[in-house]
Image (cartoon, rainbow, N blue to C red; front, top):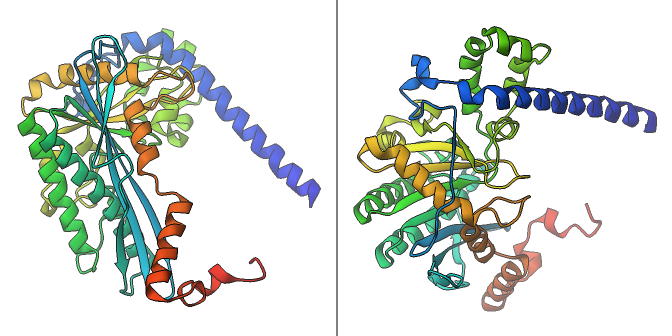
Length: 387
């Protein structure tokens, strides 16, 4: 057993070392040539990209006079014998920056609002339950976003996560969950419209993106770039095609982006297909108004994915995007190993529903109903043998 385990682990170590060596050599080449890459030379990707340059250096701006909000949602799902409970909470942290002292902080609706409790007594599949729980969390975040847009003059609103729903959250048309999905679609559209009406900039911050869109685009353009003799020589022995196939965008970009640099920006709509986001959703036009880039905010952390809802005038997209990133950069570089914006970190802390908080809610439910854990909990949750 021990020999087999050591053999498997040794093989895994070799694979990891091979990946890291390839990434290091690939990043060295890209750092040498990234200034010379002109994206306008590639018409197949130009229609979905707003930059000619492969990367852009972002300079941090003064935050004086800016009001920046961070919004996040918390979620807990508890399964019992006769029902499921979904607990959600949405919180906004609003920072008003003055000329000298630290920012004044406000919270919406409260510093620690009580969770919303949604009981489910219907028989749903595991997939439907996961979809419903996720949609409840998104709805909580969007309702808070709409309230912040209405009650505060906010320059920049940072949402923890994407500005668009994930395909896995879209239920089948005949599903019970579809009604909740339609509600969330309406909240998205209300949020987009109100942000434009109020002149607020909305940005989605995705901390752990698994997207490979940048890797795909690089797979299209690198064969042409490598044709140059000087680049071909530098890339000798680097299996970049293999690396592109196994890498996420943030891992790939981390090999050559320096702190304060962003990748080229592409349309969100180019990342999704009509089969996963049907035209009938009514959000397809908005997907074309969302631009995606990656910003290296901290020296020793991976770049964060940034989704930016552009104003109606597409000619100003690049300037508005870089202006927003200039404000995000100074609130994301407090620690060299963790580059997430401070308002998002604070909102995450306050939105999180703790185990103790969940236990108090369940205890209160039992006290009011007269039920016990024995009658509420499923068999696997009360296994006396520790299985």
